[in-house]
Length: 457
Ligand SMILES: Nc1ncnc2c1ncn2[C@@H]1O[C@H](COP(=O)(O)OP(=O)(O)OP(=O)(O)O)[C@@H](O)[C@H]1O
Image (cartoon, rainbow, N blue to C red; front, side):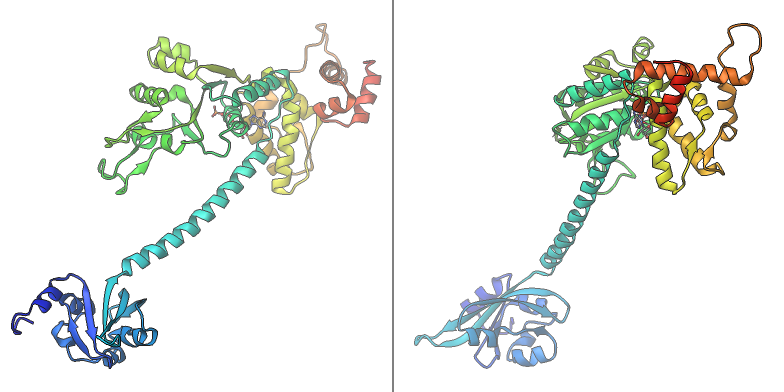
């Protein structure tokens, strides 16, 4: 195009960065800008004098602006595909002569390949988000349905009452109790009963995250914050809990080195991502849990006192199940039902098995009980599970109540003694024989019969 003598209009046309193409009414190309050739992968000069119909027939682009503008007699916009697979958003404009008749067609274009790809990506993402959202809703509803909590004992009823009270307000709760006692279950219960139930429940097991990864996991990190980090950066657990509940499980295991930062985050509800310079604000309710003696840890200087006071606004202790035997039989029935359903097997527990369970000290609490029942449902060959099927350590821990004298009593009498004691206890704790039957795992007529036998009223 440099061989032509200088012309102002041409100079202006070529200074434009956009692709511009002018044709006459039969589709012959009269003018093109320098960008036009680049768009179609040829030199702009080679386009001059060519017919757009011929070029379209050779597959250079489709559809063509000229006939469309001539048909519509006004400005039109459409998407054109080029021989290189690009998508162009083309605008065609009619140019009128002094009599108001069309005598030229000008078209210009924008490459929208990326835009269209982004649109497609956005649609896929929207679909994906819808799917994840409905999955989450389903999971949440299932979780609520599954969160059946057995609370037969006075101790557990008190735990539920306090949980319902604290659920209403955003107060920090510290759940205390041995391992497997139900701390996580109660934390979820508090979350589900509070105003944040539609928000996330983020559980952080402070003892399970390797010390050197804790900050990145908890606070997240910016893109390229450290070698081996995800290229795009990552949201931390504290940020994920925004609008919901942050549950810090095993808080007693949180390394001293991280305690100050966690304290600051809890106090200020603000933190920095690893490698970040912008403070991130979050809004969550905080529940923590431990099976450790935190006061002892403070004395031993492994736990910060200021963090302890911040966490421990409302302490809630869940007693071990050996201290609330009234929950044991209902728990067994509940769990037995779950596994009978899961494994499609019908199982019953012999009364003697229940006696063993009531005496056993359940160091692993409800978790241990669940695991044992599952095992018994799976491995016991008959419908009736008897003491024979119990593991040795449970059999060994069972001691028959000592007879009043040093003399040995017949086994039948000893068992009757135990049975009578259990019935007396159930009579004390329950109002009706139906409830007694439920707690003892026998039928109501059996309860009535045995009460008559032992003269209990
Ligand atoms: N009262 C209860 N009723 C029904 N299921 C219970 C009850 N308490 C605990 N569970 C069940 O027992 C199992 C262990 O409970 P959970 O994980 O809440 O204990 P935890 O105290 O948080 O244990 P850890 O200290 O080891 O984290 C879970 O499957 C839970 O659903």
